[in-house]
Length: 96
Image (cartoon, rainbow, N blue to C red; front, side, top):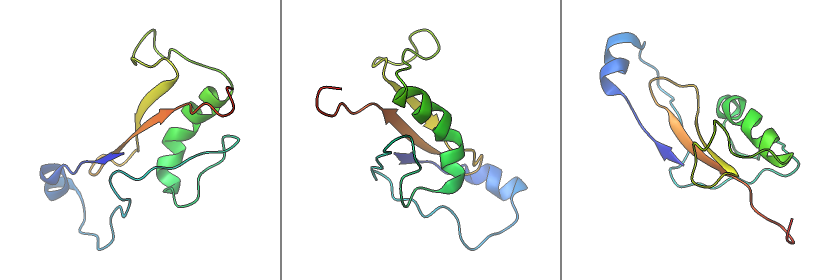
């Protein structure tokens, strides 16, 4: 996971807020049965969930070869000022 902040957009359009994203860069979350992992931002989950669900059910090769690993996707949360990018990938368990 990687965080970004578009300070110029925040300065121009965003009302000042005290608490912003508190997700830690480099954190790893594991979804079991396509459920939201504990501690993952609910807003980020809204963006990730369709890809997690699809991958959990065997989907691969999104957008005709977009990712080097066909069982993965790079997805960002929906915060336009402070997007957080997540690598969503299948982790094989017991050969499945």
